[in-house]
Amino acid sequence: MSSAAPSPTPVRRLPLAGVLRVGRPSDIWFKPALSVVVAVGVPNLTLLALGRLDLAMYTMAGSLCALYAHNLPYAARARALAWVVLGMLASVAVALVTASLTSSAVVLVAVGALLAAAQKALCDATRIGPPGPVIFAFISSASLFAPQTLGQVPGHLALAAAAGAWAWLVGMAPGLVRPHGPERRATARALNAAAAYAEMFVETSASAAESAETSATASAGRDRARAAGAAAVHAAWQSLFATGARSESRRTLERLVVRAEIALAAPADTDAGRLRSWARDLRGTGPVPSVESASAADELLGVDAERAVGRRPLADRLGPLLPLAMRTALGCALAGYVSLALGVGRPYWAIVTAASLYQANITLTWSRGVQRVVGNLVGVLLFAAVAPLAHLGPAALVLCCLAFNFGAEALISRNYWLGSICVTPMALLITEFTGFQRPGELMTDRIVDTVVGALVGFAAAVVVTNRRAGDRIENALDTVERAREHTARLIAAERPGPGALEAARRRLAAALVDLRATTDAAAGEWWQRAVPTERVLLAERTGHRTLATAVRRQGLHVLEGKRA
Image (tube, rainbow, N blue to C red; front, side):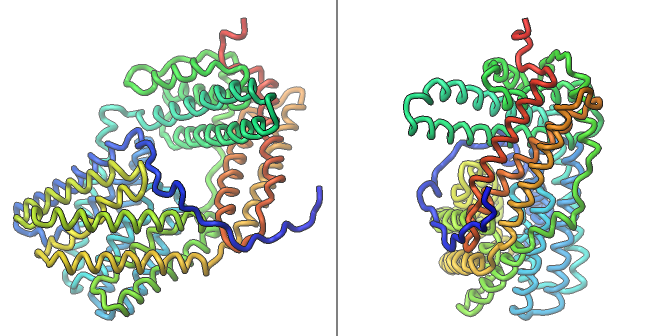
């Protein structure tokens, strides 16, 4: 293989087709939607009854924490939500103290940009998931521009903490009805994804001999389906590893995920119907479908071995995120200052718009920018239509906000711009909790800040290049190769240690998932050397062949009936 450095690719095309395409909703879209309504509604209606709706901004800080961690098992969700609430309180505390000490808009914008950068880095490093750092940036930036004195800060933080505790209870409440729901859903997704790959493999294998073009198309489709299946299996393992005590039902879930793994390694021998049947059984509240296996002991020993491998320290995970943090800090600061220069009275909207753009690479950041602008502009028109109704009184204002809270979470999983249509009027209405304002002025400020934040934020992303993206591909390739060689040595060993081959196989699978994610992220960056596509494809193919060999070496089968 040639060791020549790959040629540089200075500019990559930014997509427009498909950016606004509406997808399927999340299978649990209604859970965050209902949770946020309950978490926001109770504090807001209480303040309405007390005649202190002007304090709703502080309770919203805690209430919106209910949007997080809905895919996590409840033991892990309890910890994650607690950290989300503490992170929110820390952000609000910094913002309120800063607002009480200075009224300089230049200083406030700088602090807001630094907060947004820290929130972006920590949310990505901890992989807290949607809605990511945007909610933190929205609340902390708005708090920076709220008139404040030092004596008011403790009381306002107490309101946020009380609402955060309520949001924690709301997030944990479904566990009383279905305590293993998240890990069951994750396992079902893995089974369905593996079944889809197995079905595609059989279909495309039968038609691949028709022509070279058909064969290439079929191979690309199989690769995408296999990557999706591997990601779903990896997510299922992460969900199961995050659980607390391992009951028998969770051990059975682990065996089902192993079956999905094996289907990815040996799709030709897979009964996709059986996998889908197991997935359907997991969707309800009935018992977990039993999976008999002669190798169950080895499988669970492998799970134990993999559980013993701790996560990387937070500092190690933050290192690769430095370019994204720098993009966020620069983009948010410049967006805020341009907004100030244009005379807009609410520069924090420009800060939040810029903060919402930054994704794993330039291409995804561009797509998010288009979605944000389109969604916000349509949302401003929706606000114009709803404003007369909301201005009927404080109760109407609160109810309109709750309706938009629900709509945002119901739609955002289909496409970000759809959710933004509801987020925009909700944000505009929140500014009126302290008193009704002129709709025309609010709408003008929002449009200007949206355009400024999107343009300046994207420009900052172009300027601050992620030069480590190529290095991370090399590191991911090295990790895959080491994992593959280790698995191959265990395959060749006469008697590998108990559970050793099973653990090695899953670590190789996780390394392949990470390689694909790293490659996809780097492929969307500008001013980077070309992605070593041939090396990546070779590593993926040899890695999957090793996985298949490991399956045969262990004597595992997807469908026990095929042993007869």
